[in-house]
Image 1 (spheres, rainbow, N blue to C red):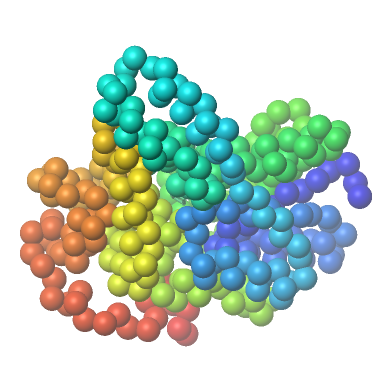
Image 2: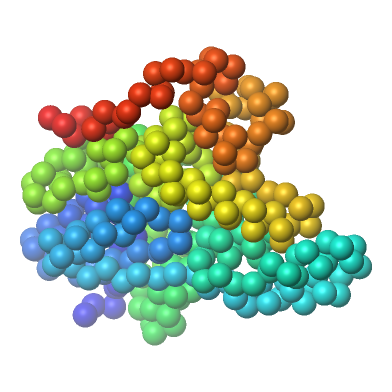
Length: 314
Ligand code: SF4
């Protein structure tokens, strides 16, 4: 093995999948070596987890799974709450009664922080993915003296922020971020899967725009609707999480969706946000149209079988 370790970050999504298939071609043509990493946030859809196993099986690659553990952080917060004069006895009792690790990284992160992440406080990506990959996989390689290339399957088409990224950025002396798909259009991503006879994650055909967290804190209105229609048990899970995280929050309340992460159509309806931004309220709102004020009868109809944005039915 060479002194360069190429670590490809996989998520079960189409872009990271295409990146792995592209790397396989480079491996066949030039003998390039690489390895794949998946950070399980604990808020993944079971279809994505199954898909990753299937993807590894079809391509013959090994994907290493890593998961954050926040037990020590929660233990430290317990000590802080026990001693801090900023908590009343009543609040302290409530928080300490519920502040215990559950073993689910996403939930434990929110229990530790006493709140859910939001667009402006997006600690989920940093803690569950960036730092977990660094601490559990990349840093040990650097400590062993390797030079690491961290490959990320982002594309400029996805957002203005991503369009501004360079193809390579040097993090430190021995660590470089590589974005091989930066200028790829989505058609090339789909063609790569077809060429290797590897299907996409089935969640796309079920109308999901992204296959990361289920749901993501920044899900769009129609995504929330589709998730609640297709997978109501994931909404029920978030409802339970909202109750638990509220119990350990100092102010006694925290909702999964925060207004700073909401799309403009949600943000504009300030009355609705003030009234009900908990997940059940957001699901009710997702079934409405015209700024949340009119109930959409159409959305009571069963969903058609394929709603993919990428023309996957063709
Ligand atoms: S997919 Fe969304 S919720 Fe999950 S870590 Fe990324 S930003 Fe956070």
